[in-house]
Length: 498
Image (tube, rainbow, N blue to C red):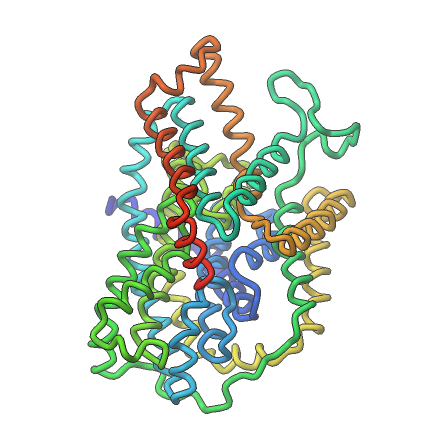
């Protein structure tokens, strides 16, 4: 593994890839700082930047945007009590109280330090677990892959925000949208309604940018703009020895929890940060300080969400399965680059796999350099009126979508999905399961057809193979568990707190 990591650092340390990592982390942080725009919308908005780039450079930049946006939300949470995205909601509970108590500097410092330590450890887990899981995945057959993807869809739906029935309905709708276009095997067009532009299916970039990017802009416009940043001067951007003693264990526990949760389908930064905060509040010696400015209440969730952000790449790179909606965006970006993620990626694209892992360490170091010394710039950015920023964002989206195929139809598709994304948010339908279903739908169909061909049309093949049968049983258990009132109520309360 050491030789592979050295090779990866050689790939990541080139001027082109190093610049892409830095620019991605910088832009991700800049947009992630803006209240209401999280990693999902940030990556959707900045996806056009990677068009035309080499595949390794593109995925390194997108990864930098991801954990840059993931960290950027902590700044507004601490200084303004406005979380940039869902996982930063937990940080507001104690981070903003620390800022009001004159400890904004230590709060920002522990968020950066915790994220850096957690990111480095989680990246090491990715480097170790990736090849091991890939070796296991190579023994999977088409039936096993179909069952694995079905399990991923089910778990992502039952763990997503909102009503389980609505989440499953959105997932099914996403699978249906993914099947639009020309059947690869028969050459027949499906659900195109004689529209020539749909013969190749709905474009991933227009859907993602409309559903998550433009729709997010529309939602932000209808909310009153209240941005009263903390007026107290920020000083002492470091920790004292006593503070180090208090945060060492919370960072370790948050890192461990986030590393595990990030790998799970449907897991992500929001669940990991919420779980880390809950755990810390129960085991900490300073329970009485939580909610009043406990530094442990910032260290644990910030470490957990960054660890989860890194380890969510494991199922993406090894199995080609997105652990969450952001990873579904990553799969779409890889497909746009002509790369099919999966267990053979290490052999087929070693520069991409090991270069990405090495860039994660470099990116985490860049985040510390970008955020702490430039905190004054981020505070000033928060004072820019949103009505001056959103026209530029929309123009940038339109140009980016059009440039992909030089086709006006893609811009219209973006507008349609922006409208749908806005409507879905109003009626309580989470769009993330739709995106995951849209990405996994065509893959599931391919593996389903392969499995049925190999078994000569016998559907029992999904139950005869032990791996496939086990995965299907787990999927049934996941659905049944959410039918239990106490578990469903616990999930809704947890997501409401997050």
